[in-house]
Image (tube, rainbow, N blue to C red; front, top):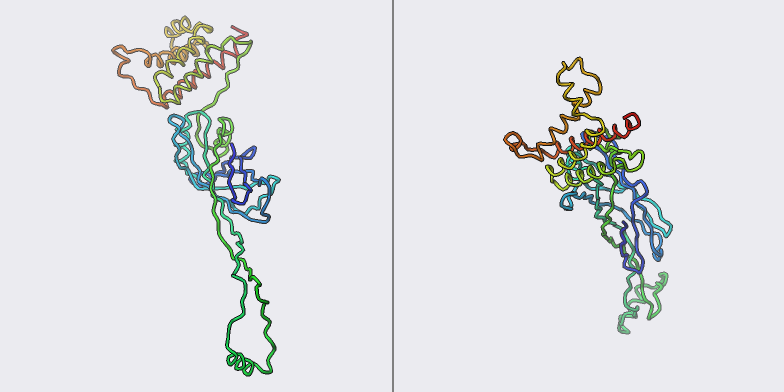
Amino acid sequence: MNATIDLGNGDFLQLEPARRAFHLYPGAGGAQVEVTLRISKAQDLAQGIAYRVSARMYVEDNSDRRQRMLCTLDGAHLVTPLVRAGEVQLSGFVTDEQLRIVEQLRAGGDLWVNLRLSLTSVEWRADSEPPYQPPQISDQELEELRAANEGREPVSLPPPGTKVVFERPLQKQRTGDLRFDINVGEWAAQMTAIEAGTFVELLVPLAGGADYAGAVALLREARELLREGNVDAAIGQARKALEQVRKEYGTQKLYEAATKKTPRTRTLPERWAIMVEDLYSTMSGAAHNDEVTKEFTYSQEDGAMLITATAGMLKRLAADRQTL
């Protein structure tokens, strides 16, 4: 995850994301994006050159890996790279609608970013003229010049064969690509900081070894299927994971007893059992194709909700396992 840009003089610029490269800050109708990069030179052959760094930021769709333009980023200051790495900070702006779309693109996974970098510098190019040769004039013209300049200070001319060297400014632009990922936890923390909606990431602890490893594996498969757009298959895997909860809590018997009571008179375990059984029943529509369920259509958001609810039930089960 670094970019190497050829400077054309045997030296190279190297850029990579800083340890905490990505930050979001609240804005009006969106958020300010800040990306921090580490920048250095391979050998520092040409010293003292300052660069203005900018980039176009693209994000990847986790379902088909296509890149989509998000925003432009600009450096606030010029940077003069050395062999010892320094930092450059780029900033831009994204709207609330763009953030919502990014959430759909990453589909609960890591966010992959590609920066199409542009580095602009003003460098001095040394040019020279052919060796100086004194003008060729006739003796009469020479006498006339001497008469015209009599009494004036003599003009110093370079000796024959001297090269006249001068420098002129030259703007140069170099480009490169830097691709890196923003992991789920880092992205969620940044979205929380700007109080924007995000997918729920829920850790399900495997207490006491691999007791629920099979159910958690099914849940991971469900999330991957959802990212790929296979909503019904994703819900089907989450439904299989929920069977562990039903078995451990004995929710079917509790549900039968609870439905014979009024809602106000149900115990707390009975109320939990109704939630589990209703969740299971809702997900069953994705696996069955009977007269009732054949018309059921589940959206990506439906799948995210059902998978997250199942994860919550597994997390609760892991906490209660000692009392069951």
